Length: 430
Image (cartoon, rainbow, N blue to C red; front, side):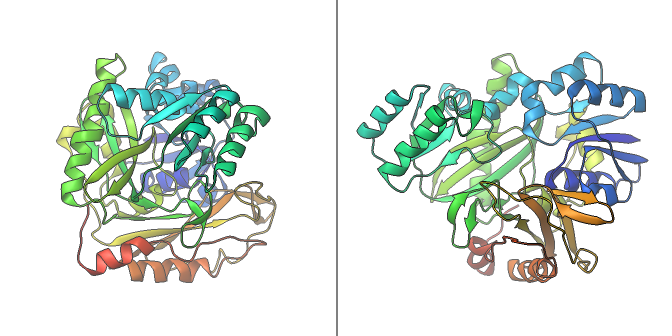
C-alpha cells in the first residue's frame, strides 16, 4: 500500500513516521517533505506542491489515500479536487475548512450552534476597529481573520499595543490578505488545551488530549508562535471535562456542518480555554496541531492506517485506538529570529548523536545542503520523548535537545510546567 502525505513540517514528519510503521505499507510519499522525512525508513520525498501536481501523482502512483497536513491546501480546496477525481483523501472540504481559514466564519458558526466562545466583533476598516477599542479597552484579543501560519493572534498588554496591532493588520498590511479583516474578542482567562478528533462525516473518534505552549519564552512570556512545545495527556481535560467537550463542542460542530450542507470529515482541532467549570473555544483548526501531533502520535499504539481507513469508510464508530499510558512531551528548537524573521541556512550539528530510547527527533524547518542538514524555517525540530511521568519525559527530551546545536537556537526550558503538579497529584486524562 502507498500513501501520500501533503506537507513539509513536523506534523507531517510525525504522520509519515507513524504511517510507515504499519505492516501494510510499501511506501510513504511526503510532498514536499523535509530532511527528516527524507531519512525516515519507508518514506520518500516528492517535490510537489500544487493541487494539480499532487492529484496527478496520486493517480499515477495509485496511492491508497492521501492525508493533508497543513491548513493552506485545505483552504484551497484540495479535498474537493481529489474527491471530484475519485481519489481517496482524508481531510475537510473547502467549505468545512472555513472553520480555520476564517475566524469570523468560525465565530458566527459557534454563535449559530450554541458552542461556547468569547464575545466578539469583526472589522475590515481601521477607523471602526479603533473606535471599538476606545469603547472596549480590554482585556481583549486581536486576531487576523485569515490564515497567518500561527502568527495572527495578538494579546495586547496595553491600549497602545491594541491600536498598533489593528494598524499593522488593517493599514500596514503586515499579514497580507490574512489581516484584511480582524476579529476582536473578549480575553478569556484560564488554561489552554488542545482537543483533536477524527471525524467521518457522522461519527467522531477523540484522540489523546494535549497542551501546546504558544509563547516564545519560559513562563509563557513573549510573542505568540506556532508552538514551542507540547505534551500529552493534558491533565486539565479531566474525564468530566472530556465528556463536556464532546457534548458541547465537537458533536455540535459535526451536527452543525451537516445541517448546513457540508458534512465534516478529517481531523478537527478545538483550541480550548478551561477555567474551573468554565469551557470556551478559542479557535478551530481543520487538521492536526503542530507540535501537538508529535506527542499524540508518539503515544498512539494502534495502526494509524487502519484508523484513517475506518474514517474514510464511515466506520469510526467501529474502532477504538490504543494508547501508551506514559506521558509524551515535545520540545521545539526554533531558528534565530523566530517568529518575526527566522534565519535560514544555519548548519545543524549533533543530530547523529541525538539517538536515545523512547525519543525521536521530528524535523520541521530543515533541508539538505550537500551532506549537511541546515535550518530552513522558523520551528526547526521537535525532540519528542516518552516517560512514566512528566518529569521523566522532560528529562529525556531535554537531554537529547541539548546535544543538538545551530546558531541562535531558541528553546523553552519549561515545556510541560502546567502538568507537573497535576500529574504528581494523580490526575489523569486520556
